Length: 429
Image (cartoon, rainbow, N blue to C red; front, top):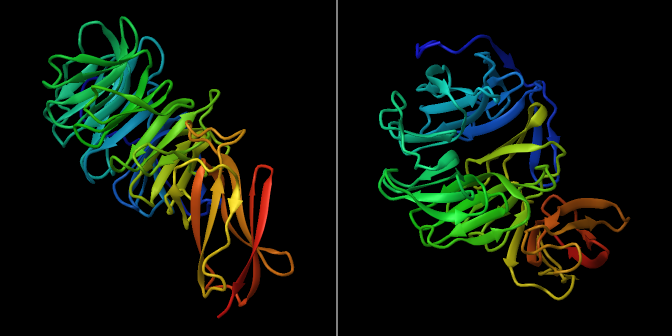
């Protein structure tokens, strides 16, 4: 097939809101899609409008009401699997895919009407694994080659340096300065260009790169085979920010706040978050069992994650438990539940507690101990679960708003590993 501007819509149907929404304790909830496809990439241009792509069979899903309804396009061109999508604004975006077998055949689709329709823009040999666009005209794709466009994808030229057999990820901060990750003839590495891809220099060796993000020309993150690395000097030096497991996907809002899907023992079933530029990472509380493939955070609160077996997760709280705030990254010497303050209170009180570095807690890797903070009434009934997630070592504070609870005596209980402690609280209205 040539580069004809065929409309790639073969069959469209609606998935209406008969779904059951499974709430998780931390603010993530699942949205069964009614499909069995492996969902590989997600992007939202607003809190309500977004696109998801996947394969098995290959599909393009679109919603304009935050997942209540989906319009689904079945895509069946030469057995192509859809892997990656990227929007540069609320109207213009691209999808890439390939047949995932040798000899590789790939395709790029483009939309200029917010994903309502897609046209085939390019088809060629080889595979595509990542892409990045600065604007509606200038962008790059990476895979078995490294190509650049300056006219919105109509034409592409190669800028991959000699000796590299593939490029797995790409990110540019302007038309001249960018980074790519891949596998040269020697060790795998992260490379940098300052002249638009004409020449490249090696910055990281020994670890394959899966995804890149730069907040500016100085500060960036690389999701690598051995964890997450960060640079604050344009890549001249990189240091380990998170070192447990491979990184699968990342979504950063700025240099300080970001989410990563790590992979432990071959499976990706966690979401970790940093709120202070990678100094600390906490488990974001995802407790599903599905294998995660991609995450996209539209804001500090609203985000999406997609999985195998057609499963979609959404958060409107940033994933973390509402109300909890890490107030210190130092390492406490012991577990401790401090008395709430004020006490008595009406109707808001603060509860401070500590998680120490101990057996089963990996501070450097960001994986902590499963922590539960609950409230009980005088009859011993659990009336509120304030926190239920893995927390890294540190001191935390939870602000409990008891506006919807009657006056009386309550008990706050902290359990973490083998530790348990209870404090008495008095609510007076």
